[in-house]
Length: 323
Image (cartoon, rainbow, N blue to C red; front, side):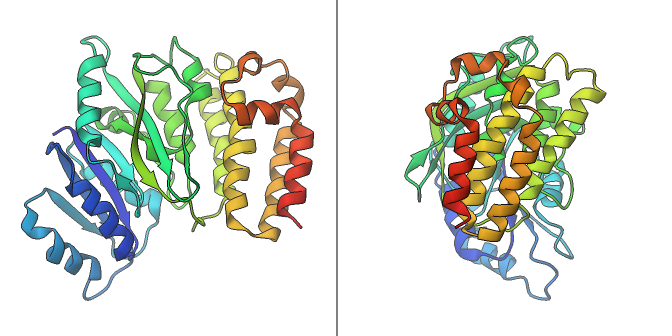
């Protein structure tokens, strides 16, 4: 089996139906669906009744795992990875819609670019953010088999979301790559996987539609996870080798991803705490970042504008989000 779609269901049947219908419309059939029900123990599970009513007769391979009590997104994904049978897996958020050709395109891309002596371990694709009318960009070279060990720029340019990637399941299990329980550590998962990744492939295809929304977890988990990332690379004696790449990725994450997510929350108190946290973490890296080899040729226009005047950007962000 080529692909496992992994979904954490938290009692939102409307979003789940939207996602499952899109998966059911795949043009290829070489996939399975793993659903971890994380709404907590109930004598009658609305989710299981929903699955039975709408999808049981379709004959698709669906496995539902029920947690006796809610364990959270990270725990659920780790459970789903262990239960999956696909060569690759895609982590899917409730409410995402998957392009009907996604599994076919991904399978074809892997077959085209994978070589005998180097397996593809991670594939990055694009997401369309429906409610903002924006599409994520790819800053790595596309349709070229890259190795993070020699193509170090992969660590600088890879997007820190797990929803625009597929991962080779065997590598993830063998190297014990997992999300840290009870907190969001998407970037940590990606950067730990990159340590062991032999083949990385980026493609220009938009394979997922998703609405950006208010998050249900602590946004500060997102920025705290970089402590784990830096410590991981130090423990493996890789920090000096990838210092520029990690530093570039971290500053972009703070200034673009983290502050962007905080802005979506429309919460003044949260914004004040977030900008103070980000500013404190960035101050120590300003001088070294100005010498970073990647800022000479920033591929992303928005980030390039920010880097040209980081202090000015932070000042304007405060004015816009903490009024």
